[in-house]
Length: 510
Ligand code: FAD
Ligand code: SF4
Image: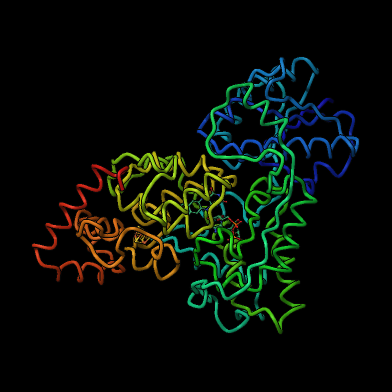
């Protein structure tokens, strides 16, 4: 029997049981397609990174004597559609059975399910063997519950997998060291240089240009910095454990104009393409912690582990629990257009300028820049979540819908009415100042609300609370903010309104 096995661009898991045995009757296929380059406008580094990692993985399989059928973007035989490419190979190669790993994206899952329904040969889906949890685990975990708190899921994961546990109790006496994870970086703690690779992806960039694929952002094709092979992914992990873990928790929420990565791992691309698994990352982190317990505090380690076995697995589970209707949710009824400066970085607001330039230059921004700067602003400016999703799904090298959508629509925009976050993540300029040095070099005044030079975050923040009070004032976690708003004079409130309207109407001048 001749089998065809599909490997999608984010399924580059060389440790998968598929590859343990070489079988001449199994053909592995990879496709670079317009279907994937064009469903949203991606960052050039994202497309080049995916194709480079796919090409490397296909070569690795070939060198291990597996049979591989690789279709490049501009190959003549490329139909540019997943299902047409599959049908073509099935026919030409006399395939009797089609096998695939379950896609993490709803869009591709539906496409493959529909395809297999009409296929006249046998087909079978397999697990990707990457995550700790299965797609539907959260559905079971939260069955009958009205709220879906990440913290409950996270504690269960810690217990189930005995991670940082002493029997049934959390190591260090606490589940969560969040409160000590909020230090501002003031330049006094040394940040090791980032681990960058000098991957040459020029050939891919030329092919993308030739085929006319639209993209955003910058690339230096001779120095693509993210890992594009398993070997490099493991090196990135080792670098993180050796140099960055030690302060990860402390400066997790910090932002600074001199440094865009701080102590973040930059492992998301390697992990989301599955070149490396979350289990390997947790094992290496724990090993480092155990060996250097006198140097590395548990708060650094717990803070990192929470991101991987907590947030990452939780977001995936929520995605599969709530799709497809999740993609349409707009609880706050936000309708405004995304400001043009999201695509150019051309704004006078120093915090946004920095976060967007990072994103355009590197295809990366760390979590708090995505949440507290760009996401916060988009929510305060009441931008339509569809436009926000398209931006986040395109701009980051690690953006795949299963993780982007719940982070954006849920955690950042509260468009799901509180399924993921317990309150909208909004803040005025003073909190941005607390966590960064952005305000020091900004033309706006972080202290005022409705003067000519007032920080737009301040004006929009109070206006947002005012305009959304019907939907938000009863939220227990918003009570304090609403009591402050209610104490404000009606004169000040109308000045805020007037100024906020001006900002929203003329947003690209700010
Ligand atoms: P580190 O800070 O070193 O964290 C380690 C790892 O933890 C990350 O690599 C990631 O795998 C995981 N992680 C941390 N936070 C989250 C989270 N909230 N959800 C899921 N995993 C998390 N992450 C993506 O991988 N793809 C996305 O498209 C994406 N979009 C986001 C959009 C918004 C609006 C926000 C607020 C967050 C988004 N995140 C996304 C989560 C997070 O910002 C990135 O995972 C992180 O910045 C990647 O950089 P890093 O590898 O240096 O992470
Ligand atoms: Fe951003 Fe306002 Fe601070 Fe300027 S003053 S950097 S706009 S928060």
